Image 1 (spheres, rainbow, N blue to C red):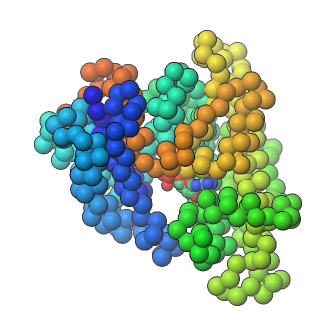
Image 2 (image 1 turned 30 degrees about the vertical axis):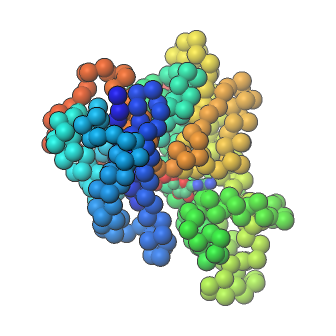
Image 3 (image 1 turned 60 degrees about the vertical axis):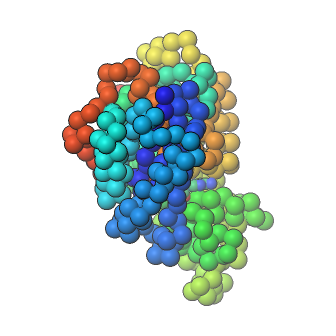
Length: 371
Ligand code: ATP
Ligand code: FE
């Protein structure tokens, strides 16, 4: 059977069809990056208009790509939280209308859970529950224990900015988007590429955030503010024109990536140590301890290599989704729907369409223990 997944939580319109064996039958993704780049960020009503204008045709293309009739869909999964309310509404209204017309169940999906579960689609046998997951994206930074769909426990999260958001803002401040090669890239991707051009990667160094705290909290505001300050200092020194980029931006990006990597590793190490406590370790039963990294920042090869290296030091296995599924997409929403179907059999199939509502923000249950 086939699950349709609809993702409109932010600025990508994603619609996909996945079967219960995890085969992707169609994957349509429409980015709004080009529009938002012009304004330097996402304007929610504008994002909503673009979703509205595109969702119908994205759905049609998805069906055509899968060579399926709408009646052949088993269920419709849609992101209902967290995200921009105006954007979420477009997806939910479309999904409701479709589900009602076809008389199919509607499966509400938590966007961050979908990021976390996506790897299981690509490695079905290898990633049993529970596993530890580092979610690093444009709006979140969280360490969670994943027991199943709807069953995630939060070990810690960012106290301020998310790492992807920091990359985007710093990239913008650096004005990387005026370089033609980075014009349509998000900040994280541009910074990753620019860091490879560094001639003196040690030129910039940033202090480790929350170095003294023994928990799984994150903070990226300090790195962001230090970055802004370092860029301004350099601009003054070089007399960079207001539409120019500092000459050693590669060195800067290398230092920034190193700081973010170190912070993510430091906190992930605490989460691993927490999992090694005897009472927590019992949860893993016989399955090999596993660390998953997901969310847009998991696209970053240097950061992921560091995280994987850390896991290996503890004898843990590590996984991330393939790059096309790290950032927002409809496939992960459809797959979460499949996981719901597989877990609950018929149990949670919902036909009470109007009772399903969006929630702008929605956290996971917090762990009682301090990690
Ligand atoms: P959330 O999932 O928290 O709601 P989101 O859906 O907007 O936020 P994602 O699509 O998961 O976020 O990820 C987008 C973020 O990933 C952007 O902030 C971007 O800077 C970051 N990102 C993308 N590619 C890379 C990369 N190669 N290196 C670092 N960061 C990256
Ligand atoms: Fe996301």
